[in-house]
Amino acid sequence: MSIVILISFVLPVFFLRDWLLLRMGPAVTIVARLREYALVLLASVTLFSTIMFSVGTGRLLEIVLSPSAILPLVLLYSVLLAVCIWIRRTDRHQFAWRIATIPNPVLVGAIAVVARLFLPPASPFARVLGTILLTFLWIGLIGLSVWEARNTPLDVPDLNFSLNLAGFVNSAVLMLLPLGAWIEGGAAWNNLFQQVGAMLSFD
Image (cartoon, rainbow, N blue to C red; front, top):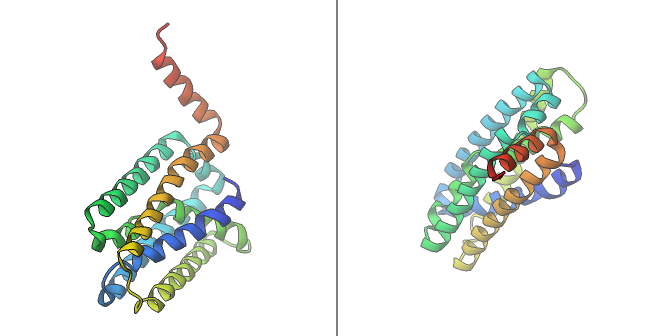
């Protein structure tokens, strides 16, 4: 995917999604929710950026855009979409914030790539450190936004809107992720389609 899509879609949309989901719960548990969100995101970004700077950006993108990586990601976001629908239909809004704490590969990849593109060239360790600092900035903005809204409870329509938005984001990822991987990943996907075509052929 192009950097324009990365910046104009992924980061703002996931920021809004996580901000709304992390507000869904009693005010007394805000700190606990933000702490869990921060730990999961920091661990995910640190692991991903370490691997990226170890094997190289080009090689990692080749792996990430391959069918063997994209198909599990599609399954993950399909499960997240199903969870959003289940919570919406059963009115179990108290569990909705946990969606934001599930490792989010698209957000993690976006933060790591933005750090790779915009931070000045440095040693691999410095780049990993810069990515972690960028993640702290993201967490700080999310945390501040959620904390500032702690005294503004969400009513049922707002709760349902938050879940609908989360479901929309997951649906958009399900559509755009395979498309972007197919455009960028070419050969591996062509081989997959040829194998599927051979399996479906009755000749």
